[in-house]
Image (cartoon, rainbow, N blue to C red; front, side, top):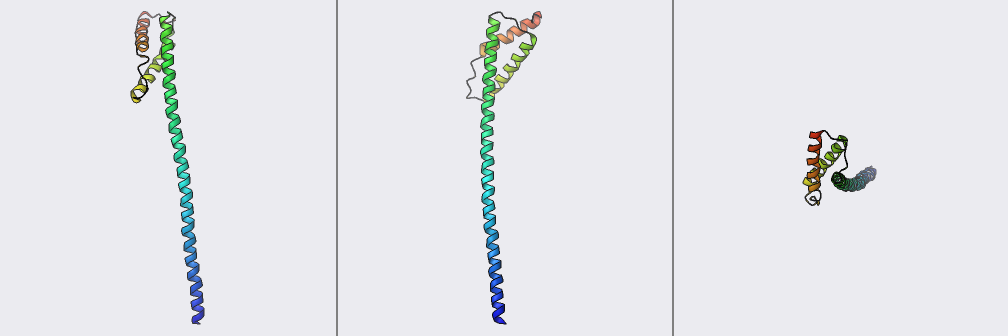
Length: 131
């Protein structure tokens, strides 16, 4: 009888030990998969952050380009509608805000253009001479 108890105890003990070892191994494997998923998500997040920054810079570049073109048109005495002035004023606001928040951005390239647009806008609005 003692033999059977010892044998049964050994089988059950070994089985329990094996089962616990299986659970630990499974947990470690799952944890490894979880870590891989987390790393993949972090990598995607880094790419999205980089993409957002690149798009914001491109928008600032586009705004600056629009400002300079608009200023050139003013200097060539081309008339503009009030809506055109409103749009370029939005570009100016966006450009200035981007420059303030990005110290490394070359931000002094449209200073005289912005000044000229603002002065012309005041004059055209006062005279009500939008096209």
